[in-house]
Structures are given as structure tokens and as C-alpha cells.
Image (cartoon, rainbow, N blue to C red; front, side):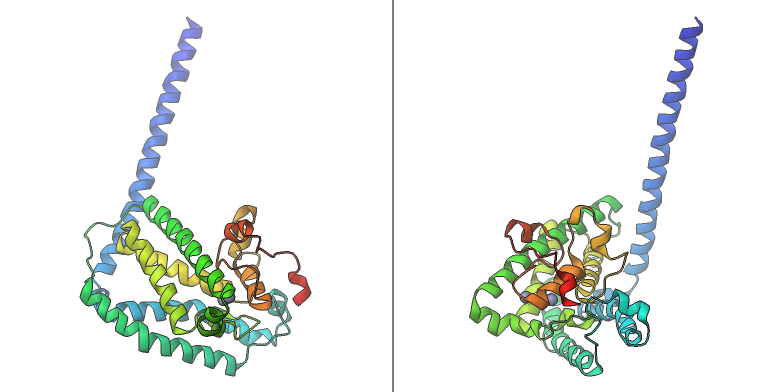
Length: 288
Ligand SMILES: [Zn+2]
Ligand SMILES: [Zn+2]
């Protein structure tokens, strides 16, 4: 009897803890949903979101905002040993001439090519802002899938443009002007490379039917990761240290691509370079 009573108590307490857990999960899902809805409602009120100039302004603002902290570190690098310690090639200083050249290239590409294409895209496919925000889980999944697809497309594009000499000479060599990367080198590319990468970045959210908020978050993540990969800094909190099992390359690997040229073709993850035997990870200390 006592035994049965204990069982009933255990059963009751397990049922109540299960219902507590599901209630807590529902309430956390509701909080996430509410948070995204508040963000989305706030963004939808921006008239500029529907403007033909939004994509170019958004791309430029996010890119320069991602570069700014690294530019600040580059300025301090010659004065502070602590910052030099985290720079992958500390002997290679970032000069104003180099930074200005990259900035001019980026502005030229945005004004002459991304701006007219944004207007054409806006006319062809006007921005539609649905009233409901996406679910947090679908946002995370879609951003991750978009990144993996972009990584694959860029890996193939990049490999092809290194294997075929005339493709390298006419379309990709410009990105290899600097053997020691710094944040602003991320968008120091020729027109064909910039348009190809822009096309891949735009195509994937369209293929997956992503919500506009998810698409914006993917763009921000993609631009940040591209700047980080070119930053030339390796911090304890850099993405390649946070992602387990060496699945992510980031600054440590992409820096080596600019230095040695024929290794590490994937922009972010390491699986494609592993499969194609083009991954190099061991002698980064040699370049210091
Ligand atoms: Zn390359
Ligand atoms: Zn690069």
C-alpha cells in the first residue's frame, strides 16, 4: 500500500514536472516569438526597407560597421603589444594607403554596380513584408543552411578561378593583392567576383523561401564572417575556436590562403578543403 502510494506520488510528481517543463518550453518559445515579432514590427515601420536604395545602404553600412572595430585595432596595433600578440602577421602593418585603396574599391563597386542592380531588383521583385515574424528555430536553421550553401558555392567558384589560369588572372587576382589580410580586404575584389558572391548570397534565401528578416540576418552573418576571415586577427573568441571539431576555418585558414594561394579555398567551413585535400592548418607559425 505504502509502495503503491510512493509510486503514485512519484508518478504524480513526474507528470507535474513534465507539464512544468512543457509549460516552460512553451513560455520560452512564446518569449522568442514575441521578441522576433517586436523586432520585425519595428523594422516594418522603416519606409527605407521598401526603398530601391535599401540593399546598397544596408550592405555598405553592415560591411563598414563590421570593419570598424578591426580598423581601430589596426590603428592601435603598432602601439600596443597586447594587440600585436593577436595579429596573425604582426610584422605586416596596415597602412592608410592600403586601407584607403580598399575603401575606394568597395565604394566604387557599391555605387557603380550594386546600386543599379538593387534598383533593377527592386523593380523586378518589390519588397514584401509579411505581418508575422518567423520562428526563432526556422531563422537559425535557414541561416545555417544558407551559410553552408554559400560556402559550397564559393568553394567551387574559388577552386575553379585558381585552377584555370585565365580565370585567375582576369577575375580573382585582384583579391590577392595583399598577402597579409586586414578587414577591408574582404571586399577588395573585381566586379565579376563581387557580382558572383552577391548572386550566391541572394540566391540561397530565395531558394529556401526565407522570411525577409531571416534573409537580413543571413546577410549580416555572412558579411561579418567574411570580414572576420580577412581580419588578420586570431582571438580566443574567434569563430574557429568556438565551433568544435575543427569544422570552421575563419581568419586562421583564410589568412593562409592569401599567403600561400593554393590552399584553403572554402571561405568559412573546412569540410570541402578536407575532402579535396586542399586544407592546410599546421604551419601558420612559419609566417610570423
Ligand atoms: Zn583565392
Ligand atoms: Zn580573401
